[in-house]
Image (cartoon, rainbow, N blue to C red; front, side, top):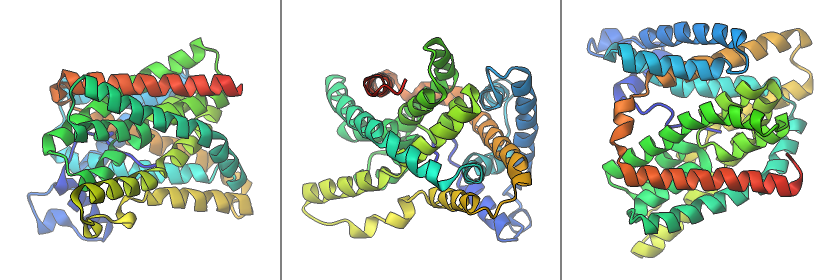
Length: 361
């Protein structure tokens, strides 16, 4: 349901440029040092178009995976200049959310509700496993407590979005946040490449793979990439499961606020905003789904809307790949990576185990 560390770029200039452009103001003219976000968007569109074409030629890989891989290859072999960063930041965040909303026009609200309820038990188990593994494995590896929480919540809920939501509450050091974000992102990329192959090897159904991807992959963008690389049906199912899972960041944050207040013997009410952490694009996804269910969308628009959603997904994932600095990822250190690996494996295994017990393979 939200995103994410999908791109380990944090450009305040890019965010400012995006907001300024959407308000109809030319930041480039007002502040000559701030590049237009059209440069990054144009680059992401070009890479995304190539990825879509390759995805049609090699459907077993799919456009979303090609988008990330091509983007990462360009970023780390050729290089991507600072002029592209505002547009890439905008595409990897805002465009990804638009793509999720567009997906809602292809799904009925009844299907969304049914899938959300079907996945809730698996989701709750994987969240408990994630926090338990983070606590015990982190204690064994002697990981600082706040870093354990960041990696645990990032793996359990929604990657970088969850880390960003809880950071103001538990107040980690900057390097701890960077370690957690980089660690989570490493396993997002591995999951996108590995999950579809494992799903075919295990002969999983579309629903089974969608449930696995939606409950075991950290970030929304990576869930979408892996799901639609497997099949259209698996992608639809995985997206709904992931959005249901992402809403659980709200009770997690409220629980952390209570714990921090108890620890410090004082409330931090002014430092916590429910409106700030709520993934609003999920609400608009539901609105789009309700509009589809009402019959207001003509049937002739089904295929164009489906194509638009897929292209926006590939565009956003291409921007994420173009923003992914492998050298920066390697600076995270060994112990946080081992913790992230252990928690991620535990979540993946628990999701498969619960599905096997429930007969949803």
